[in-house]
Image 1 (spheres, rainbow, N blue to C red):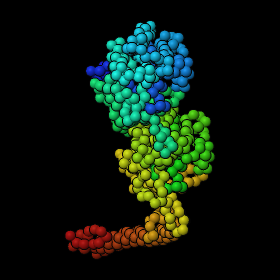
Image 2: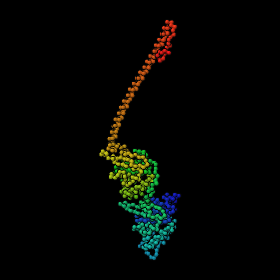
Image 3: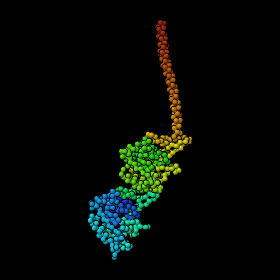
Image 4: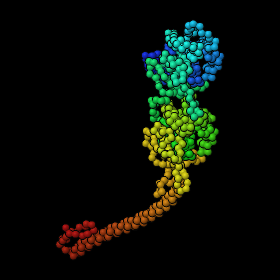
Length: 591
């Protein structure tokens, strides 16, 4: 079956490739992304390298995955290993060659070429091989062919001109048959192959390398040549494990991941407040750096527990302590990691950095991320990876890891150990500009004691705090406290406690004085109110007296008028009263 090509040009979910060249996906994780879809379809690819670099496993995985995943039967003609040996060897990759042979999806043909048993007489060529291989291809309708290895095949040739001629004929014959072929070849001295010709007649050349630096081995792959299409030209590390070959996924090199707006808690409420009140962005990268003993691992564990409490999976890479040590130590500050390990949300992978090369670590991390599907990945500490390579290699590896996690929308939270001699606001690996949030922990020495301080050095996309908080590890978790700034600088520890005691005493005195003043004001108020009441009563009495006096006056005037009338009547006076008496407001007046 030919490769499935989508409307967008993608091949079976892999990256799109040039429309001008058909490609056969290899199914090898990561390789099809480098090549833009696989090896050239209907053409020959040369896989070369030194002994032990994985050429045969590469070729067999191409053949097996073609038969099992892409419906393309294949023929393997081997000149060094028998079919039984080959079946046993690739079983370590999880492939059952016997089943594929029984299902006529794969055919294995061992051809023994022993130089001591060859007697050269007259002209000879590879016609017999072509007939044998052609019959095998036709027998199962093979679309793929593997020849392993060229050096073994041509070991019987002593005439170099004949060898080069037959080599050209072999590549031409395979192309005429229309099969997609992978041929393995040994690397020569100072050149890609022994004969120095194979790479020129091949349409695609893949170089495998197995190097050892400082007692640490690393396998690498490079696309040397690929006619008719663009391809990645860098060296890419690859891993051989029980699931086959996996080239470190190049999707990790991209920067096209989504930027989530969701915020997640760090597990420490006051730290969330410092991060704009909501915590980290989901899918962002967080670096916690500091010297030894400043509490980096405790912050990582808090974030991991918070993630588990949200029902999310967490993958914890411990590079300095075992799982049991981490769980025990975190339990002392009230963080129960074992609970989450037991229910499967938290998975530990503890290993010494020097046990494998950097690329092996990276490939292992990729694999565990794919299998565990975490929402958060913890690496503690990333500075330990320097021991597995150079600083530059470790930095490059971590950039790929962070890019991969970002592209997968996985929150990455890492710690970095800095030494006292280093600049605090920097890392050995130069990741300060890569990460989204950087939290710095440091010791503050004051009054003969050392205390921990925490501040947010940067956090992209949010208005974060610029304040320093004292960082306490307690039996019930992590506490962030305010620090005091005095004449001697930032106050922490016992000096902070003394400052708090002084402020508490002063507050008590201020409170008592305020209460005393309030009581005095109340007493004065009551006195004033009593005075007002007395004056009001006096005013009332005065008004009543005025009313009585006014009534008496009216009565007195009326009495006088009545008396005058009676007196006039008694004297029989004929004169009229000279004036009429009017009453107004208790006063008498004439009108």
